[in-house]
Image (cartoon, rainbow over all chains, first blue to last red; front, side, top):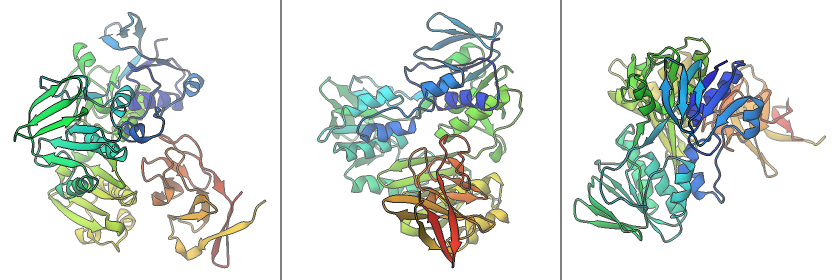
Length: 408
Length: 104
Protein backbone atom coordinates (compact mmCIF):
# COMPACT_ATOMS: atom_id res chain seq x y z
CA UNK A 1 0.00 0.00 0.00
CA UNK A 2 1.46 3.31 -1.09
CA UNK A 3 -0.14 5.54 1.54
CA UNK A 4 0.23 9.21 2.26
CA UNK A 5 3.52 11.02 1.76
CA UNK A 6 4.20 14.50 3.11
CA UNK A 7 7.20 16.47 1.86
CA UNK A 8 8.24 19.02 4.48
CA UNK A 9 8.30 18.25 8.19
CA UNK A 10 7.59 21.71 9.58
CA UNK A 11 4.47 23.03 11.29
CA UNK A 12 2.28 22.25 8.30
CA UNK A 13 3.64 18.82 7.42
CA UNK A 14 3.82 17.73 11.04
CA UNK A 15 0.25 18.79 11.73
CA UNK A 16 -0.95 17.11 8.54
CA UNK A 17 0.64 13.80 9.56
CA UNK A 18 -0.99 13.91 12.98
CA UNK A 19 -4.32 14.94 11.45
CA UNK A 20 -4.31 11.95 9.09
CA UNK A 21 -4.20 9.71 12.16
CA UNK A 22 -6.72 11.82 14.08
CA UNK A 23 -9.07 11.32 11.15
CA UNK A 24 -8.67 7.55 11.42
CA UNK A 25 -6.46 6.88 8.42
CA UNK A 26 -4.83 3.47 8.88
CA UNK A 27 -2.41 3.24 5.94
CA UNK A 28 1.24 4.30 5.83
CA UNK A 29 2.04 7.94 6.64
CA UNK A 30 5.53 9.17 5.77
CA UNK A 31 6.89 12.59 6.67
CA UNK A 32 10.03 13.71 4.85
CA UNK A 33 12.11 16.54 6.28
CA UNK A 34 15.47 17.94 5.25
CA UNK A 35 16.39 19.01 8.78
CA UNK A 36 17.79 16.58 11.36
CA UNK A 37 15.11 17.48 13.93
CA UNK A 38 11.65 16.34 14.83
CA UNK A 39 8.92 18.59 13.38
CA UNK A 40 9.08 21.79 15.44
CA UNK A 41 7.47 25.20 15.81
CA UNK A 42 9.36 28.06 14.21
CA UNK A 43 7.91 31.14 15.99
CA UNK A 44 10.16 30.67 19.06
CA UNK A 45 13.32 30.79 16.89
CA UNK A 46 13.49 34.60 16.98
CA UNK A 47 12.48 34.77 20.64
CA UNK A 48 12.84 31.97 23.22
CA UNK A 49 15.52 30.17 21.19
CA UNK A 50 17.59 33.36 21.43
CA UNK A 51 16.90 34.42 24.99
CA UNK A 52 16.14 31.12 26.76
CA UNK A 53 18.81 29.61 28.98
CA UNK A 54 19.31 26.48 26.94
CA UNK A 55 17.85 26.63 23.46
CA UNK A 56 15.85 23.64 22.38
CA UNK A 57 13.41 22.89 19.61
CA UNK A 58 9.75 23.07 20.52
CA UNK A 59 8.71 19.79 18.96
CA UNK A 60 5.24 19.36 17.46
CA UNK A 61 5.49 15.63 18.08
CA UNK A 62 7.98 13.59 20.10
CA UNK A 63 9.65 10.42 18.78
CA UNK A 64 7.34 8.47 21.07
CA UNK A 65 4.22 10.14 19.68
CA UNK A 66 5.33 9.58 16.09
CA UNK A 67 5.97 5.91 16.89
CA UNK A 68 2.68 5.54 18.70
CA UNK A 69 0.82 7.06 15.74
CA UNK A 70 2.83 4.96 13.25
CA UNK A 71 4.14 8.05 11.47
CA UNK A 72 7.40 7.35 9.70
CA UNK A 73 9.63 10.41 9.88
CA UNK A 74 12.52 10.41 7.41
CA UNK A 75 14.82 13.25 8.44
CA UNK A 76 17.89 14.91 6.89
CA UNK A 77 16.69 13.95 3.43
CA UNK A 78 15.33 16.05 0.57
CA UNK A 79 12.72 15.11 -1.96
CA UNK A 80 14.41 15.70 -5.32
CA UNK A 81 11.77 14.73 -7.87
CA UNK A 82 8.15 13.71 -8.23
CA UNK A 83 7.29 11.07 -10.79
CA UNK A 84 3.62 11.86 -11.22
CA UNK A 85 2.94 9.04 -13.65
CA UNK A 86 4.45 6.43 -11.33
CA UNK A 87 3.09 8.13 -8.16
CA UNK A 88 6.51 8.16 -6.51
CA UNK A 89 8.84 10.67 -4.87
CA UNK A 90 12.58 10.33 -5.36
CA UNK A 91 14.72 11.25 -2.35
CA UNK A 92 18.24 12.67 -2.06
CA UNK A 93 19.48 9.40 -0.56
CA UNK A 94 18.65 7.68 -3.84
CA UNK A 95 15.56 5.89 -2.57
CA UNK A 96 12.09 6.23 -3.99
CA UNK A 97 8.82 6.35 -2.13
CA UNK A 98 5.45 5.49 -3.66
CA UNK A 99 2.43 7.63 -2.76
CA UNK A 100 -1.29 7.39 -3.06
CA UNK A 101 -1.68 11.07 -2.20
CA UNK A 102 1.17 13.54 -1.83
CA UNK A 103 1.23 16.71 0.25
CA UNK A 104 3.81 19.38 -0.52
CA UNK A 105 4.45 21.33 2.68
CA UNK A 106 7.83 22.62 1.58
CA UNK A 107 7.48 25.99 3.30
CA UNK A 108 9.39 29.11 2.41
CA UNK A 109 13.04 30.11 2.42
CA UNK A 110 14.61 33.44 3.36
CA UNK A 111 14.78 35.85 0.46
CA UNK A 112 18.46 36.32 -0.35
CA UNK A 113 19.98 39.76 -0.37
CA UNK A 114 21.22 40.14 -3.95
CA UNK A 115 24.51 41.83 -3.12
CA UNK A 116 28.15 40.87 -3.29
CA UNK A 117 30.35 40.92 -0.20
CA UNK A 118 28.27 38.69 2.08
CA UNK A 119 30.28 36.29 4.22
CA UNK A 120 29.96 34.01 7.21
CA UNK A 121 28.83 36.83 9.48
CA UNK A 122 25.87 37.59 7.21
CA UNK A 123 23.13 35.20 8.20
CA UNK A 124 19.46 34.37 7.68
CA UNK A 125 16.97 32.87 10.11
CA UNK A 126 14.78 29.97 9.10
CA UNK A 127 15.87 26.86 10.97
CA UNK A 128 16.88 25.92 14.48
CA UNK A 129 20.50 25.61 13.38
CA UNK A 130 20.29 29.15 11.91
CA UNK A 131 18.99 30.27 15.30
CA UNK A 132 21.92 28.68 17.13
CA UNK A 133 24.38 30.36 14.75
CA UNK A 134 22.79 33.77 15.35
CA UNK A 135 22.52 33.23 19.09
CA UNK A 136 26.28 32.72 19.31
CA UNK A 137 26.70 36.38 18.28
CA UNK A 138 24.15 37.96 20.61
CA UNK A 139 26.22 38.44 23.73
CA UNK A 140 26.38 41.68 25.69
CA UNK A 141 28.50 44.30 24.00
CA UNK A 142 28.30 42.70 20.57
CA UNK A 143 27.00 44.72 17.63
CA UNK A 144 24.08 43.36 15.66
CA UNK A 145 22.95 44.80 12.34
CA UNK A 146 19.52 43.78 11.18
CA UNK A 147 18.76 44.23 7.52
CA UNK A 148 14.99 44.44 7.10
CA UNK A 149 12.44 45.89 9.51
CA UNK A 150 9.94 43.06 9.24
CA UNK A 151 8.78 40.68 11.93
CA UNK A 152 11.81 38.40 12.02
CA UNK A 153 14.20 41.34 12.12
CA UNK A 154 12.30 43.24 14.78
CA UNK A 155 11.75 40.22 17.01
CA UNK A 156 15.46 39.47 16.74
CA UNK A 157 16.21 43.10 17.56
CA UNK A 158 14.15 42.77 20.74
CA UNK A 159 15.85 39.49 21.68
CA UNK A 160 19.29 40.99 21.00
CA UNK A 161 18.56 43.93 23.28
CA UNK A 162 17.41 41.57 26.00
CA UNK A 163 20.83 39.93 25.81
CA UNK A 164 22.62 43.28 25.91
CA UNK A 165 23.83 43.51 22.32
CA UNK A 166 23.69 46.86 20.54
CA UNK A 167 21.32 46.81 17.58
CA UNK A 168 20.84 48.74 14.36
CA UNK A 169 17.85 47.98 12.14
CA UNK A 170 18.16 49.03 8.50
CA UNK A 171 14.96 49.22 6.46
CA UNK A 172 14.86 50.25 2.82
CA UNK A 173 11.17 51.21 2.89
CA UNK A 174 10.10 54.58 4.39
CA UNK A 175 8.96 52.84 7.58
CA UNK A 176 9.20 49.47 9.31
CA UNK A 177 6.51 46.82 8.80
CA UNK A 178 5.30 48.28 5.51
CA UNK A 179 3.70 45.03 4.49
CA UNK A 180 0.45 44.29 6.28
CA UNK A 181 0.79 46.52 9.35
CA UNK A 182 -0.95 49.93 9.56
CA UNK A 183 1.36 52.92 10.02
CA UNK A 184 -0.25 53.85 13.36
CA UNK A 185 0.76 50.48 14.82
CA UNK A 186 4.17 50.35 13.15
CA UNK A 187 4.86 53.72 14.80
CA UNK A 188 4.24 52.26 18.28
CA UNK A 189 6.62 49.40 17.55
CA UNK A 190 9.22 51.77 16.12
CA UNK A 191 9.06 53.87 19.31
CA UNK A 192 9.28 50.80 21.53
CA UNK A 193 12.50 49.78 19.79
CA UNK A 194 13.96 53.26 20.11
CA UNK A 195 13.02 53.36 23.79
CA UNK A 196 14.91 50.09 24.23
CA UNK A 197 17.98 51.58 22.59
CA UNK A 198 17.67 50.16 19.08
CA UNK A 199 18.80 52.43 16.28
CA UNK A 200 16.12 52.20 13.61
CA UNK A 201 17.14 53.53 10.20
CA UNK A 202 14.14 53.53 7.87
CA UNK A 203 14.24 54.65 4.26
CA UNK A 204 17.88 53.62 4.04
CA UNK A 205 19.27 51.84 1.03
CA UNK A 206 22.43 49.77 1.32
CA UNK A 207 25.27 50.77 -1.00
CA UNK A 208 27.63 47.92 -0.17
CA UNK A 209 28.46 45.22 2.33
CA UNK A 210 31.90 43.93 3.22
CA UNK A 211 32.38 40.94 5.50
CA UNK A 212 36.07 40.46 6.24
CA UNK A 213 35.53 37.54 8.60
CA UNK A 214 36.13 39.64 11.71
CA UNK A 215 33.27 42.08 11.20
CA UNK A 216 30.68 43.23 8.69
CA UNK A 217 30.76 46.79 7.39
CA UNK A 218 27.57 48.06 5.83
CA UNK A 219 27.75 51.26 3.79
CA UNK A 220 24.39 53.01 3.53
CA UNK A 221 23.26 55.01 0.54
CA UNK A 222 23.52 58.28 2.51
CA UNK A 223 27.17 57.65 3.34
CA UNK A 224 26.79 56.31 6.90
CA UNK A 225 28.67 53.15 7.73
CA UNK A 226 27.47 50.53 10.22
CA UNK A 227 29.98 48.05 11.65
CA UNK A 228 28.64 44.87 13.20
CA UNK A 229 29.72 41.53 14.57
CA UNK A 230 26.81 39.91 12.78
CA UNK A 231 24.34 41.03 10.12
CA UNK A 232 21.03 39.24 10.14
CA UNK A 233 19.15 39.53 6.87
CA UNK A 234 15.36 39.41 7.22
CA UNK A 235 13.96 40.78 3.98
CA UNK A 236 11.11 38.36 3.46
CA UNK A 237 10.65 34.83 2.30
CA UNK A 238 10.07 33.06 -0.97
CA UNK A 239 7.98 29.92 -1.38
CA UNK A 240 9.90 26.69 -1.96
CA UNK A 241 8.43 25.53 -5.27
CA UNK A 242 11.22 23.92 -7.31
CA UNK A 243 10.05 20.36 -6.70
CA UNK A 244 6.51 21.22 -7.80
CA UNK A 245 7.68 23.30 -10.77
CA UNK A 246 9.92 20.53 -12.07
CA UNK A 247 6.97 18.16 -11.81
CA UNK A 248 5.05 20.47 -14.13
CA UNK A 249 2.67 21.89 -11.51
CA UNK A 250 1.54 25.49 -11.86
CA UNK A 251 3.42 28.08 -9.82
CA UNK A 252 1.71 31.40 -9.14
CA UNK A 253 3.42 33.13 -6.20
CA UNK A 254 3.67 29.65 -4.69
CA UNK A 255 2.36 26.27 -5.69
CA UNK A 256 -1.11 27.05 -7.06
CA UNK A 257 -3.90 25.14 -5.37
CA UNK A 258 -7.67 25.44 -5.36
CA UNK A 259 -9.75 26.17 -2.27
CA UNK A 260 -9.41 22.56 -1.17
CA UNK A 261 -5.59 22.86 -1.38
CA UNK A 262 -5.40 20.52 -4.35
CA UNK A 263 -3.03 21.22 -7.27
CA UNK A 264 -4.12 20.47 -10.84
CA UNK A 265 -2.93 16.92 -10.15
CA UNK A 266 -5.79 15.40 -8.12
CA UNK A 267 -3.34 13.32 -6.07
CA UNK A 268 -1.03 16.19 -5.11
CA UNK A 269 -1.89 18.81 -2.52
CA UNK A 270 0.09 21.79 -1.22
CA UNK A 271 -0.35 23.69 2.02
CA UNK A 272 1.24 26.33 4.21
CA UNK A 273 3.88 28.90 3.21
CA UNK A 274 4.63 27.20 -0.11
CA UNK A 275 1.19 27.50 -1.69
CA UNK A 276 -1.07 30.22 -3.06
CA UNK A 277 -4.79 29.67 -2.68
CA UNK A 278 -8.07 31.52 -3.19
CA UNK A 279 -9.15 33.19 0.03
CA UNK A 280 -12.90 32.74 0.27
CA UNK A 281 -13.49 35.58 2.71
CA UNK A 282 -12.21 38.10 0.12
CA UNK A 283 -14.09 36.72 -2.84
CA UNK A 284 -11.44 34.25 -3.88
CA UNK A 285 -8.48 36.66 -4.01
CA UNK A 286 -5.37 34.49 -4.48
CA UNK A 287 -2.96 34.87 -1.59
CA UNK A 288 0.00 33.16 -0.03
CA UNK A 289 0.38 33.36 3.74
CA UNK A 290 3.53 32.95 5.79
CA UNK A 291 1.96 32.37 9.15
CA UNK A 292 2.12 29.74 11.82
CA UNK A 293 -1.61 29.31 12.25
CA UNK A 294 -2.24 29.12 8.53
CA UNK A 295 0.37 26.36 8.26
CA UNK A 296 -1.37 24.49 11.03
CA UNK A 297 -4.88 24.93 9.67
CA UNK A 298 -3.96 24.12 6.11
CA UNK A 299 -2.01 21.04 7.18
CA UNK A 300 -5.09 19.74 8.94
CA UNK A 301 -7.39 20.64 6.04
CA UNK A 302 -5.10 19.05 3.44
CA UNK A 303 -5.11 15.84 5.50
CA UNK A 304 -8.88 15.84 5.48
CA UNK A 305 -9.11 16.40 1.74
CA UNK A 306 -6.41 13.80 1.03
CA UNK A 307 -8.78 11.36 2.68
CA UNK A 308 -11.60 12.26 0.33
CA UNK A 309 -13.31 15.29 1.86
CA UNK A 310 -13.88 18.26 -0.42
CA UNK A 311 -13.75 21.05 2.11
CA UNK A 312 -12.61 24.54 1.13
CA UNK A 313 -10.27 26.62 3.26
CA UNK A 314 -12.47 29.22 4.94
CA UNK A 315 -10.25 30.60 7.70
CA UNK A 316 -9.46 34.29 8.16
CA UNK A 317 -5.71 35.00 8.11
CA UNK A 318 -4.31 35.70 11.55
CA UNK A 319 -0.87 36.31 12.97
CA UNK A 320 0.89 37.79 15.92
CA UNK A 321 4.27 39.19 16.90
CA UNK A 322 5.82 39.65 20.34
CA UNK A 323 8.41 42.36 20.90
CA UNK A 324 9.45 43.44 24.41
CA UNK A 325 6.21 43.45 26.40
CA UNK A 326 4.08 44.29 23.37
CA UNK A 327 1.97 41.94 21.36
CA UNK A 328 0.60 42.76 17.95
CA UNK A 329 -2.21 40.69 16.50
CA UNK A 330 -3.79 41.08 13.08
CA UNK A 331 -6.85 39.25 11.77
CA UNK A 332 -7.63 39.56 8.08
CA UNK A 333 -5.66 41.48 5.48
CA UNK A 334 -5.73 45.18 6.28
CA UNK A 335 -5.10 46.21 2.67
CA UNK A 336 -8.68 45.13 1.95
CA UNK A 337 -9.90 48.08 4.05
CA UNK A 338 -10.82 51.57 2.83
CA UNK A 339 -11.49 53.23 6.21
CA UNK A 340 -10.56 52.54 9.81
CA UNK A 341 -12.24 52.84 13.18
CA UNK A 342 -10.16 52.92 16.33
CA UNK A 343 -11.20 51.28 19.57
CA UNK A 344 -9.15 52.11 22.65
CA UNK A 345 -8.74 49.45 25.33
CA UNK A 346 -7.14 49.60 28.76
CA UNK A 347 -3.39 50.10 29.29
CA UNK A 348 -2.83 51.99 26.04
CA UNK A 349 -3.87 49.03 23.93
CA UNK A 350 -5.97 49.71 20.85
CA UNK A 351 -7.49 48.06 17.84
CA UNK A 352 -7.94 49.43 14.35
CA UNK A 353 -10.92 47.97 12.54
CA UNK A 354 -10.56 48.06 8.77
CA UNK A 355 -13.80 48.45 6.84
CA UNK A 356 -14.46 47.92 3.16
CA UNK A 357 -16.36 50.47 1.09
CA UNK A 358 -19.63 48.65 1.72
CA UNK A 359 -19.06 48.77 5.48
CA UNK A 360 -18.03 45.16 5.82
CA UNK A 361 -15.37 44.47 8.45
CA UNK A 362 -12.39 43.02 6.56
CA UNK A 363 -9.52 43.19 9.05
CA UNK A 364 -8.54 44.21 12.55
CA UNK A 365 -5.08 45.20 13.78
CA UNK A 366 -4.36 45.48 17.48
CA UNK A 367 -1.42 46.26 19.70
CA UNK A 368 -0.95 46.44 23.43
CA UNK A 369 0.88 45.07 26.43
CA UNK A 370 0.70 41.32 27.00
CA UNK A 371 -2.44 39.78 25.61
CA UNK A 372 -4.56 42.92 25.94
CA UNK A 373 -5.92 42.81 22.39
CA UNK A 374 -6.25 39.04 22.01
CA UNK A 375 -9.87 38.56 22.91
CA UNK A 376 -11.19 41.41 20.78
CA UNK A 377 -9.03 40.43 17.81
CA UNK A 378 -10.42 36.92 18.07
CA UNK A 379 -13.97 38.29 18.09
CA UNK A 380 -13.11 40.53 15.15
CA UNK A 381 -11.87 37.48 13.30
CA UNK A 382 -15.26 35.83 13.81
CA UNK A 383 -17.03 38.98 12.61
CA UNK A 384 -14.83 39.02 9.51
CA UNK A 385 -15.60 35.36 8.86
CA UNK A 386 -19.32 36.15 9.13
CA UNK A 387 -18.83 39.00 6.65
CA UNK A 388 -20.48 41.27 9.20
CA UNK A 389 -20.81 45.02 8.72
CA UNK A 390 -21.04 46.31 12.31
CA UNK A 391 -21.87 49.94 12.96
CA UNK A 392 -18.60 51.92 13.15
CA UNK A 393 -19.84 53.66 16.34
CA UNK A 394 -20.24 50.27 18.03
CA UNK A 395 -16.78 49.13 16.95
CA UNK A 396 -15.28 52.33 18.26
CA UNK A 397 -16.97 52.30 21.63
CA UNK A 398 -15.27 50.43 24.44
CA UNK A 399 -18.59 50.10 26.22
CA UNK A 400 -20.14 48.02 23.44
CA UNK A 401 -18.99 44.42 23.79
CA UNK A 402 -17.77 42.96 20.52
CA UNK A 403 -19.37 39.68 21.48
CA UNK A 404 -22.76 41.36 21.34
CA UNK A 405 -22.08 42.36 17.71
CA UNK A 406 -21.41 38.74 16.86
CA UNK A 407 -24.88 37.73 17.98
CA UNK A 408 -26.48 40.49 15.90
CA UNK B 1 -9.18 17.05 50.99
CA UNK B 2 -8.09 20.63 51.31
CA UNK B 3 -10.27 23.57 52.12
CA UNK B 4 -12.47 25.59 49.86
CA UNK B 5 -10.94 28.92 48.95
CA UNK B 6 -12.95 32.03 48.13
CA UNK B 7 -12.03 33.18 44.63
CA UNK B 8 -14.37 36.07 43.91
CA UNK B 9 -17.94 37.28 44.13
CA UNK B 10 -20.38 35.60 41.78
CA UNK B 11 -21.10 38.94 40.10
CA UNK B 12 -17.43 39.64 39.40
CA UNK B 13 -17.52 37.51 36.27
CA UNK B 14 -19.87 38.17 33.37
CA UNK B 15 -21.77 35.29 31.86
CA UNK B 16 -19.69 33.44 29.28
CA UNK B 17 -16.49 34.97 30.59
CA UNK B 18 -13.40 34.21 32.62
CA UNK B 19 -11.24 35.84 35.27
CA UNK B 20 -7.90 35.21 36.87
CA UNK B 21 -7.50 34.11 40.47
CA UNK B 22 -4.14 33.81 42.25
CA UNK B 23 -3.73 31.91 45.48
CA UNK B 24 -0.71 30.73 47.44
CA UNK B 25 1.71 31.09 44.56
CA UNK B 26 -0.60 29.37 42.09
CA UNK B 27 -2.76 30.82 39.39
CA UNK B 28 -6.20 29.73 38.23
CA UNK B 29 -8.91 30.69 35.77
CA UNK B 30 -12.51 30.92 36.99
CA UNK B 31 -15.29 30.67 34.42
CA UNK B 32 -18.96 31.55 34.35
CA UNK B 33 -20.76 29.59 31.65
CA UNK B 34 -23.60 30.94 29.46
CA UNK B 35 -26.02 28.86 31.58
CA UNK B 36 -24.72 30.57 34.72
CA UNK B 37 -22.60 27.82 36.21
CA UNK B 38 -19.08 28.33 37.58
CA UNK B 39 -15.95 26.33 36.77
CA UNK B 40 -12.23 26.51 37.55
CA UNK B 41 -9.06 25.31 35.84
CA UNK B 42 -5.34 25.88 36.10
CA UNK B 43 -4.62 29.38 34.86
CA UNK B 44 -1.92 28.64 32.32
CA UNK B 45 -2.33 27.06 28.92
CA UNK B 46 -0.58 23.70 28.61
CA UNK B 47 1.05 24.77 25.33
CA UNK B 48 3.20 27.77 26.27
CA UNK B 49 2.17 28.78 29.78
CA UNK B 50 0.08 31.74 28.66
CA UNK B 51 -2.66 32.86 31.06
CA UNK B 52 -6.08 31.81 29.87
CA UNK B 53 -7.88 34.65 31.66
CA UNK B 54 -7.10 36.91 28.66
CA UNK B 55 -8.72 34.37 26.37
CA UNK B 56 -12.15 34.18 24.83
CA UNK B 57 -14.96 32.05 26.28
CA UNK B 58 -17.47 30.75 23.77
CA UNK B 59 -20.05 28.30 25.13
CA UNK B 60 -18.02 25.74 27.09
CA UNK B 61 -14.72 26.47 25.33
CA UNK B 62 -11.88 28.68 26.53
CA UNK B 63 -9.44 29.69 23.85
CA UNK B 64 -5.87 30.66 24.70
CA UNK B 65 -5.19 34.33 23.82
CA UNK B 66 -1.83 33.57 22.28
CA UNK B 67 -2.10 30.64 19.92
CA UNK B 68 -5.77 29.72 20.01
CA UNK B 69 -5.32 26.44 21.84
CA UNK B 70 -8.81 25.35 22.91
CA UNK B 71 -10.03 23.58 26.00
CA UNK B 72 -13.41 22.59 27.34
CA UNK B 73 -13.20 24.44 30.66
CA UNK B 74 -15.85 22.21 32.23
CA UNK B 75 -13.80 19.05 31.73
CA UNK B 76 -10.30 20.39 30.96
CA UNK B 77 -10.18 18.45 27.66
CA UNK B 78 -7.75 19.80 25.07
CA UNK B 79 -9.56 20.40 21.79
CA UNK B 80 -6.92 20.09 19.11
CA UNK B 81 -3.70 21.72 17.88
CA UNK B 82 -1.61 23.27 19.21
CA UNK B 83 -2.67 21.92 22.60
CA UNK B 84 -2.48 18.23 23.36
CA UNK B 85 -2.27 18.15 27.17
CA UNK B 86 -5.52 18.57 29.11
CA UNK B 87 -6.08 21.33 31.65
CA UNK B 88 -6.50 20.43 35.29
CA UNK B 89 -9.94 21.35 36.63
CA UNK B 90 -11.06 22.09 40.21
CA UNK B 91 -14.41 21.70 41.98
CA UNK B 92 -16.33 24.96 42.33
CA UNK B 93 -19.36 25.96 44.38
CA UNK B 94 -21.26 29.18 44.90
CA UNK B 95 -22.17 29.98 48.48
CA UNK B 96 -23.87 33.20 49.61
CA UNK B 97 -22.82 35.01 46.47
CA UNK B 98 -19.20 33.89 46.71
CA UNK B 99 -17.42 31.61 44.25
CA UNK B 100 -15.36 28.99 46.12
CA UNK B 101 -12.86 26.61 44.57
CA UNK B 102 -11.39 23.48 46.08
CA UNK B 103 -7.69 23.49 45.46
CA UNK B 104 -6.33 19.95 45.70
